[in-house]
Length: 368
Image 1 (cartoon, rainbow, N blue to C red):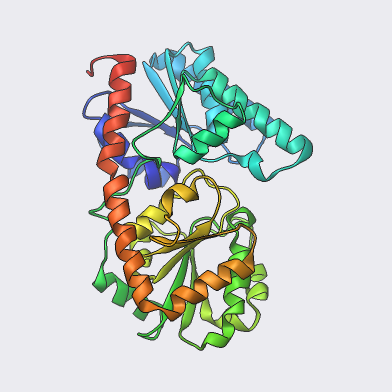
Image 2 (image 1 turned 180 degrees about the vertical axis):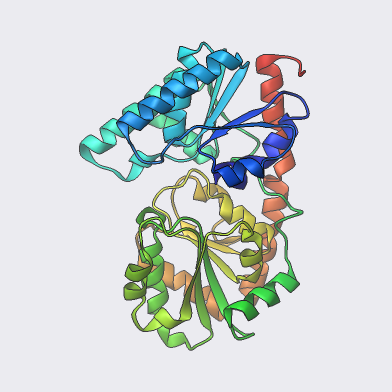
């Protein structure tokens, strides 16, 4: 999912200059559909901690790195970062780049927090370069002494891959089609959540906030798009109560832009985010966003201009901002226009990719 959703533009640019190998836990179907000009290697790596399988994955990565004699490796996500950076150090890969996209330990307490922070420190210590996908996240990591200023930086103005304006844009046809598919009335105001359905994404707060708007009539809709990782659907429907019939669930999609084009307001009530690329994807589609006031999201939303920020875990504050946008179509229009301008100005995929290519050129020299 990470490769498809975030890294495809970088891979396409890098393959024009270097021999590129992509390693992930690919399915057979994904390998058959792989893009030409790139080598794909499948190594079983689980998102959750699984000591024996993790050790096997570490050894497989180290063997691959040593055999292939890569000039550089790059990892994304905490678990993969730990395995890849350790394997790269063992195999003596000269350039080891890790991309920080948020910290799992931020919402933890006690021994779990200490252990997860230690793992992240090991990742940063094994890396020769640390890329952080938002300025506020880098500031946080420096304050926590998780990374060094000398070896860490943000590409362009942030995000892991920027936004592709040819893909994410206002699309009246997709808007009409999706709303017809979902059976929404023409005058519906649609609030959209796009991402993994789990508690740390704040989806229960979003359901509770939407339930508070139940007396605003039948025109309000809430749409969840993304994989249900924790079996949240039943819990969300109970939280929604009487508003449950006006909430929909689509599941995972490889065409998120269709649902963004159909939305009126994008909601990201997360408790932790490295950046929140879905916010700028929504913005590129002309959709304002409501997001938690946490590092990462504060770089993506200009409060009161491209959307609203609210204190995390506060369903009441979230509902208040949802209500303001539901009642005021002119405000939605103005904020949507500002969000699109910000996304295209500050986060174009071309800018982020160009800086990544420049980093590689400086680190490993001339391309093939």
